[in-house]
Amino acid sequence: MNIKQQSLKDIIKNSLNGDINAQDCLIKRFNAKLWKLSYQIDKENAEDIYQDLALFLFKLLSKLSLNKFTEGGLVNYINISLNHEMIHIRNKIYAKNKNEIPLLDEEPMLENPYHIIETNLLLKAIKSY
Image (tube, rainbow, N blue to C red; front, side, top):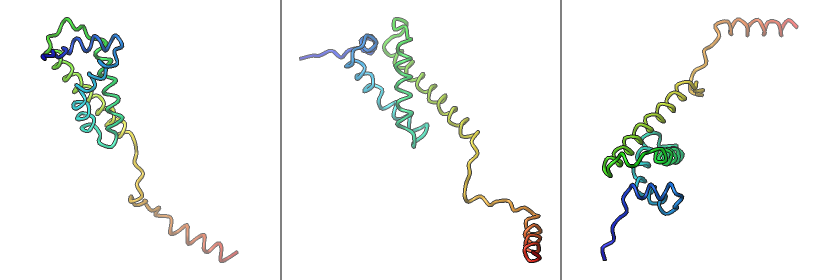
C-alpha cells in the first residue's frame, strides 16, 4: 500500500481551517526546531519560550500566502522566520536583564567613612547620659 504524505501546504490549509490533526502534525513537524531554538535562547525558561515560538509559528502561517511558495521554499521561509524570532526574543530578554540591577549578598557594602566617627559619638552620648 502506497500512502502519499500530505504536503506542508495542505497541512497548513487544513490547520487554518481548524483541523486539530493538522495542527498537531505541524507541531510535530517543527517540534525539534522549536525546542532547539528555545534552549538556545534560555535553558531555564525553555518551556515558556517554546510556547511563544509555537504561537509565533501559527501566527506566521495564518499570514502567509501559500501560493507564492514552493514546498521547499515554504520550509526555508518558516525556518528563517523562526530564527529571526529567536533573535528577537533573545534581544528582549537581554534588554530586560540589562535594565535589572541584581542584588547579590556577596557584594560588599560600601562602608560609610563617617560610620566610625558616628559610632564613637553615639557611644560617647550614651556614656554621658
